[in-house]
Length: 389
Ligand SMILES: *[C@@H]1O[C@H](CO)[C@@H](O)[C@H](O)[C@H]1NC(C)=O
Ligand SMILES: *[C@@H]1O[C@H](CO)[C@@H](O)[C@H](O)[C@H]1NC(C)=O
Ligand SMILES: *[C@@H]1O[C@H](CO)[C@@H](O)[C@H](O)[C@H]1NC(C)=O
Ligand SMILES: *[C@@H]1O[C@H](CO)[C@@H](O)[C@H](O)[C@H]1NC(C)=O
Ligand SMILES: *[C@@H]1O[C@H](CO)[C@@H](O)[C@H](O)[C@H]1NC(C)=O
Image (cartoon, rainbow, N blue to C red):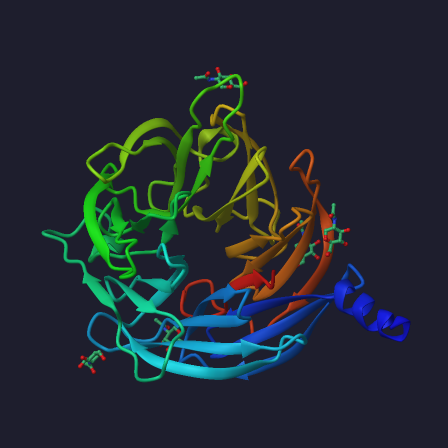
């Protein structure tokens, strides 16, 4: 048996990552020996504009959403088998609403899996039962129309930007940049996976909520009940918001805003700068990527926010994103590394993170992936990055 040992050691030493690029490729990357990042393969696939990846680890299946299309012209949803070397083999491609930008998986009480997809330009959210087959139609499609345009030019239509699962696994939230609200759905957990609309969480006009996440405290002897918070970043208003979340007997969610501030030094963003991705690791910090701020010329920034045990958040510091327009970033499971996907410079930067303090450290590895995008055209460049974990 011992002769197999080096094989397992080498597997453990390399970590796979996957990036989508609006050039029409999914790139498989490998981080070897801690600091050597390289492209191991690429696949031209996922329609014209691969925009987001969700990895189902138990089945080693990757789902890719396509940014092509709009509310009228369809796009696609694709699935891939992923081998140990990160090589992808397409399993299925189904028709979906166009202009997808984000997806998540959810399950019903029997453990059946579903995927929910946000369509920014498609002004919709769609859901699919998994595993995906090529002739599948969406389980449900929710199309959104504004009664009147919002106050910002970007708010010409409803623009769902993300899908979020709550910590109980029973609710789905959809930040809608165009509608100034986070839409809320209760999942029918009895083996249907269908969603029922709940009242939305409304934001002030012109906020443009983009991304968010939940945090739930562990019950302790100090505090009888646990606390659930929703944290969001708004692209147009540039604010970070915190909401205390409760679960009333109505079967929907109730929100109470506890904080609203600009996550930037001096409480003010440079002109044109916008918060983009929001992530949390451990319990002590959150991170928001800041596009177009040129905080570390020629690079943009990541803002670190300090999270206290009672759920209160304060601004910490900004650090370099090591590229321009950090559209997305992902933190590895053990909280030691952050992979930043910079859209316009089209590079993946791996930055060290101290899991105890939450502080971001130096640049460990950096790799150009595909051609750089144009800062003025959001349909170019690198669109997403994930760790295979
Ligand atoms: C988009 O896809 C749906 C579902 O497959 C289909 O009913 C519809 O006709 C398609 N729309 C267009 C414009 O092709
Ligand atoms: C939460 O904790 C922070 C930091 O310890 C403290 O400043 C703040 O007053 C606390 N807030 C509440 C509502 O207890
Ligand atoms: C900007 O990022 C590049 C990597 O893309 C890095 O080499 C350079 O040192 C960074 N500069 C600053 C000021 O952050
Ligand atoms: C975190 O994961 C990396 C890469 O797999 C590994 O090198 C490191 O030892 C891990 N650190 C901790 C604290 O588990
Ligand atoms: C943005 O880039 C896409 C993809 O290359 C291209 O099809 C589109 O025409 C560009 N839009 C503008 C306004 O240049």
